[in-house]
Image 1 (tube, rainbow, N blue to C red):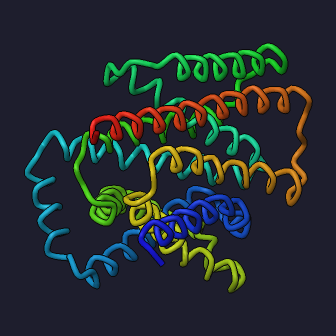
Image 2 (image 1 turned 45 degrees about the vertical axis):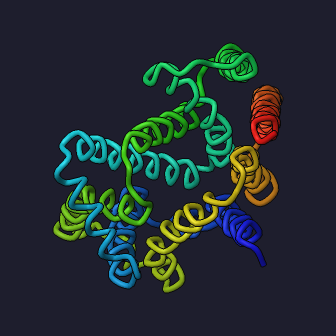
Length: 305
């Protein structure tokens, strides 16, 4: 099996894992969302310590961490990134446990296009004509929802914004996924510990009163968080960018079907129309990725001649 096939398998396992996240977090529904978040942060931090200690390149990871610590600007961005991804995790946990899986799915459909908009605003990148059409579709979708039901899908917007801003911060930082996740969880772990100690002092910890299956599921949250990220990092190296851009819509599509067919979440005609508009934006976005790659390949062939 060549590297491209291995990378594709790694990416598919990663995306399928993310697509099934609603089922995993539903198992933790009996535990308060903030407590789940605190335990997820702590378990991820402990898991990443073990991963780094067992890694063959642990010396280079240590060197990365040292360099980031010495670079005040990069470390400040990493602190901001840590709080943004924590806010994203919390929003998602609340969304799943309050029966808003469809809104979470909508948010992750929005995310790539929101990331493009943020890149235009903060990095002064220029939109292509096709990207502009995709962004207009997002605006129409949100405006339609606001006019038809009188409110915006705040869970979707929060998920897309927090992850988009997180991606923006990470774009400015040169750091391997292992070192990145280790530092990010290390930064927010003290807050998680303080929160868990507070719950213990007020006798409000709920996870250890749950059944064994729930406790095991919660303790596995570190591995469940970290392993897909490491698979993504491994797979993204040898996968063409256009294919990666298309496959990134697999998790929200899976979550959409999980929300409807497993958890029977209602899909009103207004929400369906909004999804259809977003799917048009996704189709336009994917078309843009494919045509850009074809142009790039043609340019390379011409250059080789």
